[in-house]
Image (cartoon, rainbow, N blue to C red; front, side, top):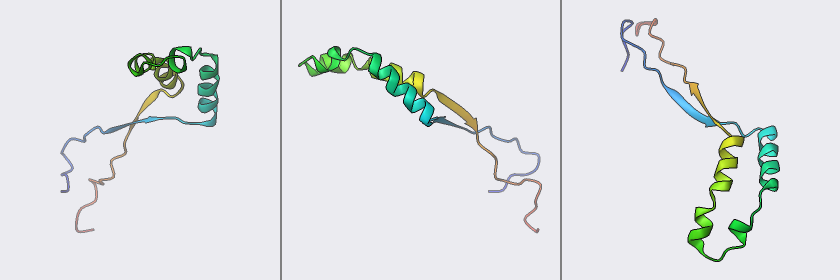
Length: 82
């Protein structure tokens, strides 16, 4: 449905993460500094899962979310007759 030229624009955003080579290297480096006995040295699955926050913390710090504005593809200044 076409919008009229006076109708308000909706601000649409998209959340992404930057998986650049630099960020991946940073992620791997930080993982290598961690002591993984709390994950691999345990037998209890629930305890392992509860300690998995180490991975998530490093993931979120290495690949922070970035919100980008989506471009409005609807050209309100062009009429249907053109």
